[in-house]
Length: 72
Image (cartoon, rainbow, N blue to C red; front, side, top):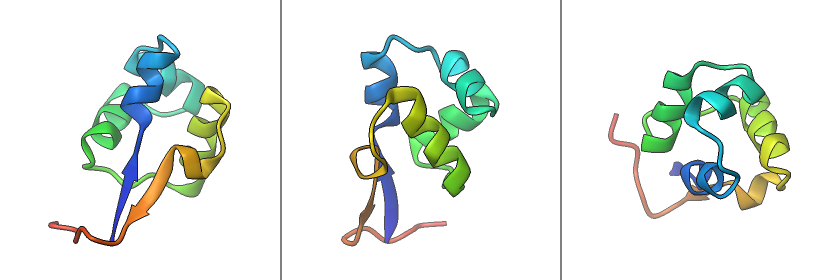
């Protein structure tokens, strides 16, 4: 199982830069970049902060992909 997300798509929709979203979520720009590439699994608190920033429920931003296996 792998956690998938729509962070990059939603960030673009809201016209947020990675730095903008990072500031709203209380993390670094590098964390947002890693999250968008699928290299970082967010904590529940970070996931909730991102959902709050884009005003969407968790299941519309993050989901489990049962068909993919983590490669790391």
